Image 1 (cartoon, rainbow, N blue to C red):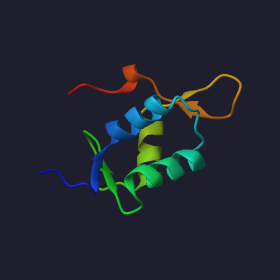
Image 2 (image 1 turned 60 degrees about the vertical axis):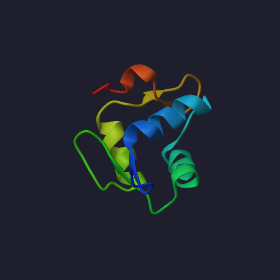
Image 3 (image 1 turned 90 degrees about the vertical axis):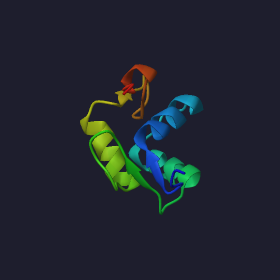
Length: 84
């Protein structure tokens, strides 16, 4: 059984794609906390126990975000989600 307070970063990226919205760091953090809860920790293929802010930093450093046209925000793309 998986731990509901331990979520893969791909779920955050899928949430971003499904919303169709553009995010800033602040709005993405708020959306993550609303959907998954503030106590949730995130993991990826190469990192564990990240807070929402640490996950945002991690995804940004890995080039998972792309700027959106006409705004200061960003989005992600299904091609940015690794499949392993």
